[in-house]
Length: 226
Image (tube, rainbow, N blue to C red; front, side, top):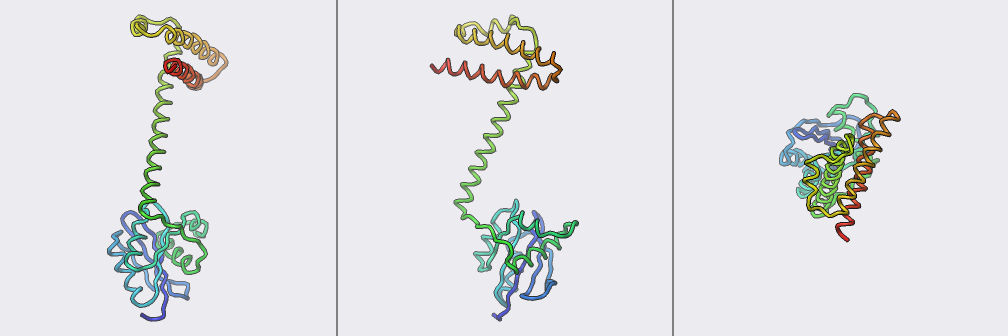
């Protein structure tokens, strides 16, 4: 191994990776290549330079995660993941191209002007992914409940007299639940009419009714749990 140092910037995409290799000095890369996004191929290409001198690799954080980082490190090639927002601030060209980005990442790696991300180990990353999934599921559930409330709120835009089918469904229900349902029926219908009379769009009025309907549902749940 010689005393040379190499800095490899990589613009990583789902299918391809653009590489730009810099030495310690010089504005232009000494080597550029576009490869398929295959970890083995990328390691093989980087290893060409690591055999000649100390080599560092960097790419921008994104949807590809840290698989490439871990593979490079396991192969004995030092690899960094740079925060995307920091890289974006360094761009001066309006037209974004893979080649320009690879060059930018390589130069920033060499100048060490961007602090790399602290890459979590696989256990931490799995825990974060699980937490993200839980948060996404919670948000999906919240949206579903909101949609169901909105759909339910449309029933209160009609008259306040319970229909025959509703009366049949109420049979056997606790008296306090039926009483709460009746109060909701009259109050929410009145609220809807008032809002529309004031010039509110029907969708706005229905959304307001849905919010108050949630309160009635909560009251029934509390009563049932008591």
